[in-house]
Length: 363
Length: 184
Image (cartoon, rainbow over all chains, first blue to last red; front, top):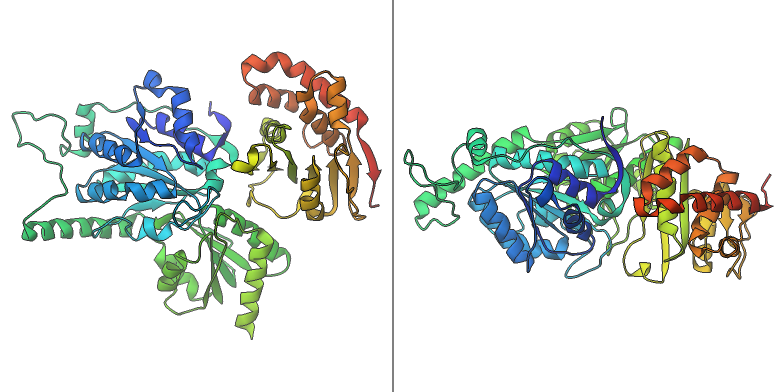
């Protein structure tokens, strides 16, 4: 029988990590995601599945522990909130360079700096445009329900190992702290070294047999000719991901005159705005990117052919709107509505913003 | 059916756990639920509130600015949430500590002496269940058998011996709630 529970997003993600056969979690507490490590320590998965849970001495230590475990072909993850993710970016860039799969969750709060402990979405640029140095991309998943906080752990690791690249769950304090009904996945076994090799090939440093050369995991290449070849290899990988991994949800877009684009908590609020708008006779729709990278450009471009306008709703000063603008290619007006500093927009203020934009278009 | 509820009061009054028991009771009757707390420093002695939604359909926004029901347990929350009750909605409050009583004419207003009843039950922690009983008397959105299951689910097993007392508190709340204004 499926197990239905009432859980916080943070707790659901932690339990899903245990059940997805994750080998190790390394973290350092920070509001609003401290429940992740609290839950793991309370559940003691080291007794249930042998999963390692460790509170590191700092974010830097945690991400480099993830590097070490990932280099051994293990499913390793970490989580933090905005200021903590900034500290982890060096390690994340190294892992992208060294082609190491891992899962990083950012339960965003308002910034910049220490900012606030309330929810925010102002790390969009950091997550989808690099964040760390060098030409790389993260595959970025944006959950908008507690269920997705759980489901994206397994999906995240599948994608991370498929592309040998770090994957980020970009959530926010509201999704992390709220409780909803969640159906938990069945317990998966953790993989042995032999199974890792069978499934993902023998790139990991699992011990050198006589039959092959030693595996080296590094992001350093002092010969520029070789580094460029490595860069091209990475770029080809990102192109393949862009082709194959775009995920999104359309809500009442079929007949919509005006479309909201939003992810995470903003997408939940925007769903309500669509409902309220339609009750007033406004044909609204919502396009919810599930992958923020790769971004659902194609569908937005197609929708732009028969839509009067778009509103990007974000808890930021306007970051995702740049990707919406690129996708729309000038075919329709694109506006932004956002709150900052940990403020969550209410459905009625978003609806007011939509009506204002529609009136501008009609003039 | 969708019921959008705000429960607001001081930290320590059991606001969040009242919301959690309501949400679990909803799950027990196969409803969709969401429980969205205020979190952060304000939880320590300041105001605490939680938005709880029970619905037969998929829940869209967990964050709302108007509610079917507001359960108000201190003055600050009264000042903030009285205007956010939908016309025809319900405002339930404990008059203890309230100096400015609600003035709305287009909603149903009910009172429950939660603090008084809880101290008569010799357990101040039953306060939130007295309040819940008062709410369920006016809006019976969850069946008592599901509340029982909800209590079992949301209380840790070591506190299960407290369930009969909590159910008694719910019953007291149902008996003592007073509708002081109706919009009809």
